[in-house]
Image 1: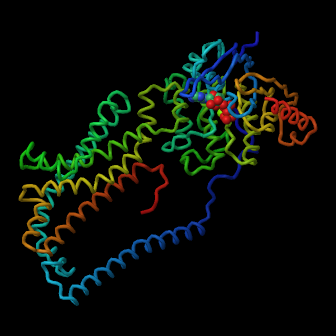
Image 2: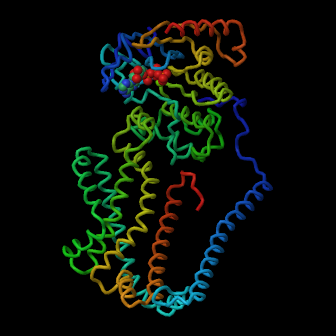
Length: 256
Length: 281
Ligand SMILES: Nc1ncnc2c1ncn2[C@@H]1O[C@H](COP(=O)(O)OP(=O)(O)OP(=O)(O)O)[C@@H](O)[C@H]1O
Ligand SMILES: [Mg+2]
């Protein structure tokens, strides 16, 4: 039996506001295998962030059942098996790069998993920031800050890494470079990754599968497999297969 | 974790370029001296102008003194001035400590408990709307003629800006950082000590810098009501006697004290809040 990293069964998420109830996700069913790299595409407001947030136990599903790494999301979170990378690096300005990466080991009973944790210094090296351990966030560029956020998310050796448009605010060249690096990190750590993006190229380049969500209410439109071998290099994006795949994704997205 | 491939090791780290660094330092020094010397020159110019006006128009000393007369008084009556600065400074410093500490405590209570905030915030706002000159006599009646009412007024005057800033600083944390702490299963205690407290420090220091000057004002205004010592009492005395050089000298001593106080707080801020790219003073 291959373990499932995420098992969503007809999950609904409603938000109640002054203007009434919004259905962010409706009857969403989804299985993500352990070790998979799944990218997510969909129009703005279709519930991509909401899906990551229910998985991370930041919000509760209104209906349906959800298992994360074989447990309830709440258990998975408190066992520190989930890492989250936001669009904004959300670094603590008063902590050096090293201290930011160490944060997960200091809070939420992080000390107890210290034996199992990755070495913060090695992770900083892994994301290409060797020599910057003692720098403060205001001394870093946007891309460097995002690398710190990735190192921080990996320090607890999470089995599931959730990334919500992590490179959305970066320029294209930096984004390309980080895409390649993220694939390398994934190949080395073998952690399951759920990656939200607005870029068709990024979705196709990174994922083993692309989950396309439709809006109003948020639901699964299609899951597009990406049959391109790893390790992938940026040159892959010039190949006819890749171009065809992106064209297909674009066509599906237009119907979402 | 395996070691990264060498392709990643971009030459991002620091390169030693002593010539460029020396140039950068020299430029920085030049700018710094310029920023210091120019205001000094302007001040001297204005003082000269003031002296010229007083002499040229023959303005009499009970209307306005010449800068030379003020300088003379400052030296001549230095002992009396310092003797009176001591109680005012003590009142201001104690008021500063008490006012800010209670504001920090109350802001902490507010952040931990919404009910407390909803119950007490309107009262605090109400008290703050009463002007100092009106609060002073009330407190003198309540606390007598000693130092206590002056300390109380200095404390009250510091209290409100610090309370407002501190409450904001503790609650206005980056929502994504807060979500991150939740993903990390951080307890409320950890969120407070590792996130909110640090987040509040820049806010706190801007309030403390305001409080550094207002606490001195509070103490002086309080001294206007029935005291025989302190900078406030000296101001009243000099005014009644039409002793304008003494009045100006007293004001200068009071102002120098609050400026010094302000700079001490700014210095501490720079040592504590190292992570904020500081605007150069
Ligand atoms: N906290 C909330 N309160 C009320 N409504 C919310 C909340 N969070 C999300 N929503 C609503 O749920 C829907 C889905 O939002 P979500 O943020 O998941 O979209 P998204 O796919 O991530 O969009 P984007 O691509 O713009 O980031 C939207 O209609 C949004 O208005
Ligand atoms: Mg989103």
